[in-house]
Image 1: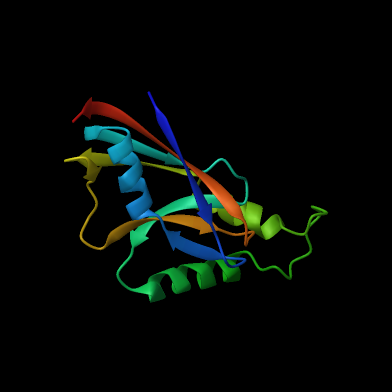
Image 2: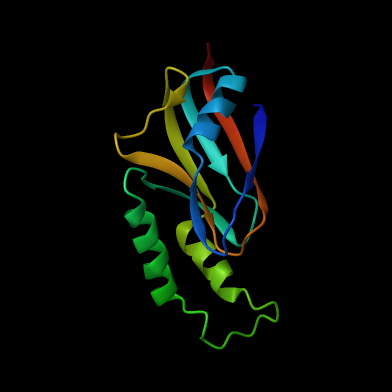
Length: 135
């Protein structure tokens, strides 16, 4: 199984960055036709989210809810000061397994794949792998 490594630059401390196009491009490089795509972020303060990509207010609402659930102002023991980022990444998860059809992600009309950045801005790696038939 081959893996494509994407480099994704976040530009805010917290951000949901749409990477759907980049994942579809990686699938083309992998020669994907039909099967499963696994998207994984090998970081402890970032994750992967599948959600609506038509209205940016959905992403803003998600980040606001996570801020309410895991406030930066709470006293944490981790000396780096980014405990909320670790907790948020754990809540959203670091991977998604998605169907592929016709060499592209088989997402719903309003769905997209997002890098969930909680400790940026920084450059992140996203691993895209494919299991199934080639073109």
